[in-house]
Image 1: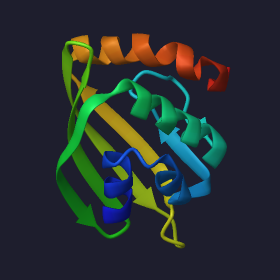
Image 2: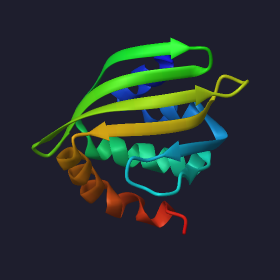
Image 3: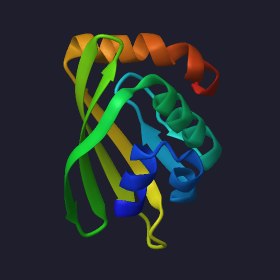
Image 4: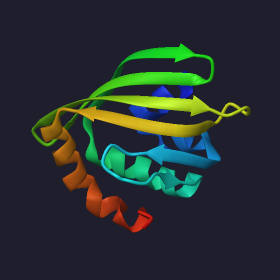
Amino acid sequence: MQAFKTAVEQLDLDSAAALLADDVEFHSPVAFKPFTGKEAVTEVLRAVMDTFEDFVYTDELEKNEFSTLFFDARVGEKKLQGVDILRLNDNGKIAHFTVMLRPLSGVIAMAEAMGPKVAHLAKE
């Protein structure tokens, strides 16, 4: 998933969004229900790009339709480590996107910074 990795690292939202399936599901580390659909997930990615600082992918694993991208980032003074787990559909588009983050203090900082940016996308 080199194209996605490059797009995110270069803050190229359009190129990253082009790799999403129309019915993509994004599983956030802080939201109970997934964000669904290319438009909503693109907005989430925009918020992430506006919130995370010093973002860099550090490693990756690929097997079959799965790509796992490990990253480091910062929100304010809080450092984060995370994992993007991507599953591709038969057309090579990202169908499922799950994010895991640590430590808790970083997750809280991320949730507080991103919450207002994506609250309108949350489904009840």
